[in-house]
Amino acid sequence: QVQLVESGGGLVQAGGSLRLSCAASKSFLSINVVGWYRQASGKQRELVATFTRRGTITYAEYADSVKGRFTISRESANNTVFLQMNSVKPEDTAVYYCYANLGLNYWGQGTQVIVSS
Image (cartoon, rainbow, N blue to C red; front, side, top):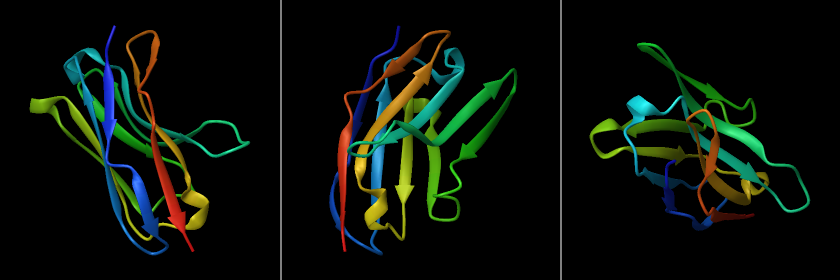
């Protein structure tokens, strides 16, 4: 199993930026998928951005709603994945969860992001 600890959420004005971090307790070499999901109040949890590893190839995937505004990145040496959120919108308000798949799904505790208009 893997533990995921998020940080970096908070209140930000529309058009501003925020950076989320997620520290994993295992090396990314043992993780198939790592990244971010979010859940707004009254809505289903949805993919934001993830890294998927297929053998030696790793590729990023983004939700259409965040393409061009959010960037996922990672520091493999520290087993940390980041989500840089730029040009945020009120509709980005949600609890953001770090996610990892090692055959089973694992979730962090979530970090709240509130975008004020």
